[in-house]
Length: 67
Image (cartoon, one colour):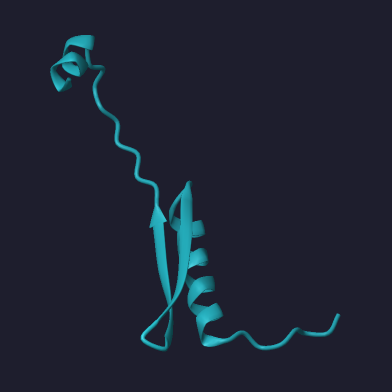
């Protein structure tokens, strides 16, 4: 199997975020947004792990107080 073309610097950054999240988080997402403003192409990367917080059981009264 022949090696593929070398990764671009942007692809290396995305791969680094993916590897970090895969190693450290059970559930994660990577959002990539692109845009073209002021004649400059921009890419915004939002790597984020889902953080789960355990909370004690709340009664319905707690939820009613929010209304």
